[in-house]
Length: 423
Image (cartoon, rainbow, N blue to C red):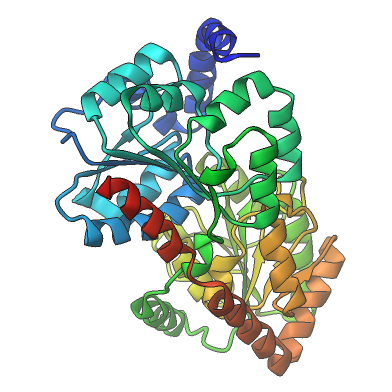
């Protein structure tokens, strides 16, 4: 498949794309809003001539935030425009950056929409987070002489096989990228094998290791635990869970309550359209559940707090003693293990971590990560860590050590960005 065939197929598929958007909007109304932006009708008042950063959804937005803040400090005169594709990503961008950046959805990847978007924005530089590659947007940037940086790039073996099946589309697109800042040497080789120019591929590491925690976050979390009268209560979190995991998590929590009857689970579904269904699941299974969005205090009788707010995940991590990161008991590839690690928490995960394989291996080798495969094993591991506080403390310290040892990717990425802006 080449780019022209891709464009034809995308154009023919647009009715289905819009129908899917409408269908998702039935469960999550935010998908129905701002549709004009997805079709190239951008908000009024956008300033041109700055830096454009694209972060497709929540995970990429989290990774982009330190990059954006660093760019705001080093290039304060340049307007920064941040785009994404999902309401959850949009919410995270707005919560973290507010009015300090321009924000909209990225138009769909059709040549006339890409041309309208870039004609309006006229960025000096484009930064695409991780591996969200859109052939027509990238080609239009190359045609206009706009450098494109693929930042914090990752490419699993599974994804590489998928791209290889579309080499006629993938290889020309990768050759048009100006800088590919990859997380590992293995991933660098995968990009080169797919057609990237070797001289434009640079191993910088993962900027997720450069995560810094605001001390006030921890103080606020400690204060809330005091208000709940839960300073000594065993609290754990299951974060970014997907369909099929919640039942396993609740089964593990039920086992835990037999040993630790005061245990509190903070359950945070990955996608907001699932909040109501997961709340109903908790109630149906007999757990007294409080929704975080209500602001209601968590009393001694509550056994589950549903994290149904946006932009609060780090704060919820700061509330707990132990952390399980979801998307990993089902074959979704896992989610960011470094957020709980940055708070010095022992981290647990399921076995499906192909999106974070390198990070998971480093944490596991350091003794900072436990892998579990069932509700019984999860409950057993959590119970053991509460019973052995010195072991839990050692895991948390090991997690912090992994971050400290691997910091520096952000600085290396920014060096490459500054070089391109200077030309």
